[in-house]
Every structure is written in C-alpha cells, then in structure tokens.
Length: 267
Image (cartoon, rainbow, N blue to C red; front, side, top):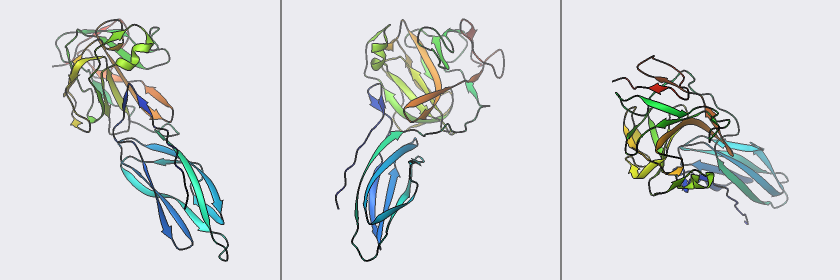
C-alpha cells in the first residue's frame, strides 16, 4: 500500500518543544484499516488528514483531530464499501502543536513572583506595552544579570535554551533568547526569557515546584538591557493565546501587576 506523510512541526527560538512529533500507524483489520496516532509529548497536537480512497469510506473524525498529551488512540476507521471489489488508499497529514480551540484553564490561580525578596523589582513593561508587548499579556521585570529566576508555578520543563550569548533591541534578535518554558497542570505554559548564556538550571522533562531555581537572568535575545520577560499562554494551532495573571506580593495576596510599579516577593 502506498502512502505519503507531510509534517509541519512548530519550533520557536531555535528549539522545539519536548518530544512533540506524533507517530501514525496503519492497522490492518477485516475489510479495512484503522489509523492509530500516538502523541508522546507534553502538549496536545492537532492533525488534519487528506484521503484518496478506493472502495473505502472513512468513519470517525473527518476534519481536525486533536490528541491529548502522552496518549494513543484510533482516530479513523477505513471500512470496505463493496465486498466484491478490492480496496486501498493513500493519505497525507499535517501536524501542529496545540489545539484548534481555546481550552479551559484555572483563571483563579495566584502566581508567585519569579524572584525572591526582599528586593523590590520594577515592572519595566506591562500588558500591551508599546515596545514588544502589543496585544500581549506579558511582563518585563527589571533584573540585573545573574539574578536567580524562580518558578512562579509548579509544572514540567518542556523547553530549555541556554547556548545563546547575544542580544539587541531589534526583533531579529528574538531567535537568540535563552529561556525556560514550564507546562502547568491546567495546560497553560509559562515562559521565562532573556536568561544569560549557560544560565539554565533545569533539564527538559524535569518536574519543578513553585520557588525552584530555573536559571539566572540576562540580556539575550530581543532586549534593550538585563531583565526577565514572563508570560503565561495557551498553545493553539499556529498561535499563542497570552493570558492575564495575578501574583502574591507583600502588598496583597492576589493582585494584577502594572508597568512602573515595584513589587516585593513575600519571605
């Protein structure tokens, strides 16, 4: 049987998310086939199949198939139409990291500040900032190079980049960011960006708890000076949906951070 496979695999900052490549398996059954897909990664994936069928019909999901993280299931059944004639098929598919729809998440979660006290740190750029946060719920914290960066929420490390040593105030330098991305229990992802060269202290796939050391701040990537970029998002097909966050500070148990203000982490 002849078939071809087309893959589109989402990569960013020169590094792909952990183990996201799916596997597709054809299972021969009486009068047809089953198509089984395995997602070995920590994020959902979406696949779209195209068919060329000979005396077969497709049963199951006909359009976009969304597969949960670290799961395997049969997504299509190809059933013989006419028992007197032979049958066969060709197919192709595209695969992307993320889902086609926004997923529910814990809107009430209160994050820890990604640094320790007692030093108060200023938010250089907040939501919808004119420099690099247009239409984006993200925060830039003023942070001297080498400051410990801590996990604001527990989760699993799905990306870690530490080899870059350059930065500049131009979007072209985004590809040179050192960073850590953490997958949370509700499927959201936090990114900690602009870490110094060799400034990552965690490994891919490692579990982290709130307050654990992730690395050290720096000035790599699209940056005008040493700081930490922090944001939380959902990964959808072809885009990221950035989400507003609230934090626990010495002022309040839960508050939205704003540009220009200084905040201190509770001891």
